[in-house]
Image (cartoon, rainbow, N blue to C red; front, side, top):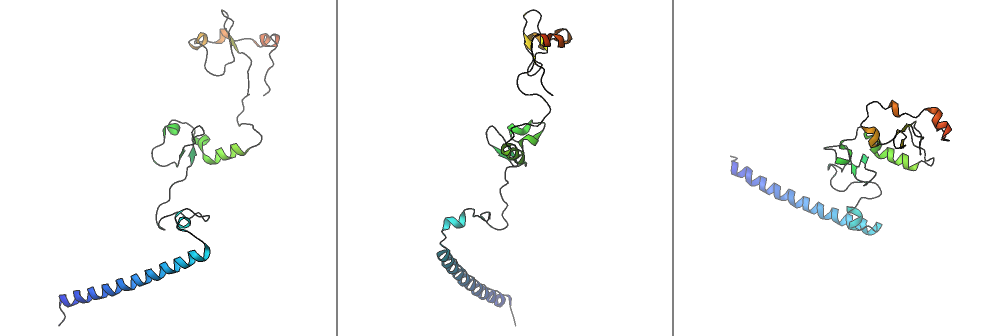
Length: 172
């Protein structure tokens, strides 16, 4: 009659045979790997680092590290778009300018032109302080003499004044 102890004893013997077979196969696999490494001139570093095929190190099912989807142009820091956003992109209204693909395209362009329909360089003055004669083009931070004023129309320079002053109107 078969008892539980007899079955457990047979399980132990079969497990020992399975372990011996597995160890034998592992030794054979290592020997084959060594011969292939010697044949192709490979080192351990070639196996542990990323090769030209782009295979990630680690096991087959291991998750890969996320590549940077967004890049900070000032520091070069990247963010994959997952998890909490870093400070340099957290408050950005439009994250498209931080996209890595957009940065590559903009750096590769030879034209040097930027997108947008607004003029570059110095602009003619639009506002003038009647007391001091200081002028402001309307771009950038407003000067102190104009920043607190609610109605800026009294500081506007008429178009006739700009023509007589010799200021060229920017091309649009």
